[in-house]
Image 1 (cartoon, rainbow, N blue to C red):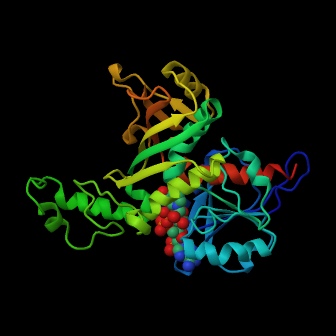
Image 2 (image 1 turned 90 degrees about the horizontal axis):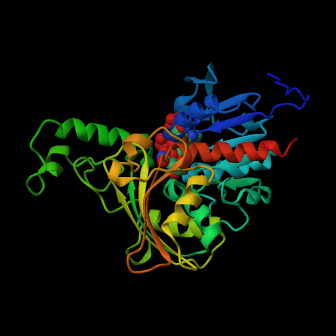
Image 3 (image 1 turned 90 degrees about the vertical axis):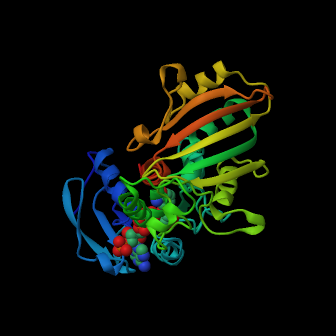
Length: 357
Ligand SMILES: NC(=O)c1ccc[n+]([C@@H]2O[C@H](COP(=O)([O-])OP(=O)(O)OC[C@H]3O[C@@H](n4cnc5c(N)ncnc54)[C@H](OP(=O)(O)O)[C@@H]3O)[C@@H](O)[C@H]2O)c1
């Protein structure tokens, strides 16, 4: 199908690799909701899904199995697949002239792959010697737009962060696990004696090391040196790269909570000079992609139950640190499948597509 813009420029052909996954599913919704700049949209997944029909832009589209040929004629490919699949196939697509926007962790920290958040470092997208642009991980993305705005004004000097991460951060399997565990504990008196929840949900805790229903789990990802988790290292390393602050001190504790979608974070951010709550509020209230929702006396602060399904980064509970006039305390919520994944990828792909004009 050849779709022409009114200017006569051929509309770019897009491939969505991983179209059947948790992120891919939201990507198809986002592509149906945003300005339609694309020509053909090709849907790709594993051979397990080949032949399935999914709807994008109101059209039923058949899923193809990932192969070299699937990239023929493609201009831009979004990769929403596991790390090892992206590590193998993104270079294959790039070698065929496709610009890859990769949502996995495979390339984020490679020095010759830009890590892009369009509201914070859009210029970085143009420098992609390997034809690959990386999308940050969902926990970093859920806070970085708000932090980028504050950093521009005040100069960030240190970050201390705790996350409250939704189960969909672990993909479809994470959501299925929570729903199944909720059905096992619903309507019971469980949660009153040691181990009762664990016994009720059984040994199969899906992608999580512990039961997640009626619980919080102070662990996300895989082990890294000195007791840190991979998820914690990602928040530190990726925040530094996106903000262009390679030595920024960052302390992170990542925690999984029984929320389906939307990551929340408490943030202690220390800046170069004294900050004021009024100044911070003004910056956050006018920053693109941020909604300031902060009036606790009126019960106004963001929570995942209200933020899920929305695009912005929501910020509430803005306070100046009691013992440090250069630091702010914030509570931030962002939908991990939208801005935390699919939306940011779509925005990057749109930046790349705009270069053609
Ligand atoms: N979930 C989040 O909040 C989030 C946020 C940011 C980034 N990410 C990253 O985004 C990527 C996708 O995550 P997800 O949560 O959407 O995972 P998911 O729900 O498990 O979906 C995985 C997708 O990858 C496809 N896939 C798996 N193995 C494949 C193979 N060998 N060849 C081709 N396709 C294959 C699957 O296709 P089938 O259906 O055919 O198996 C499915 O479409 C991961 O790298 C993840 O780390 C996730």
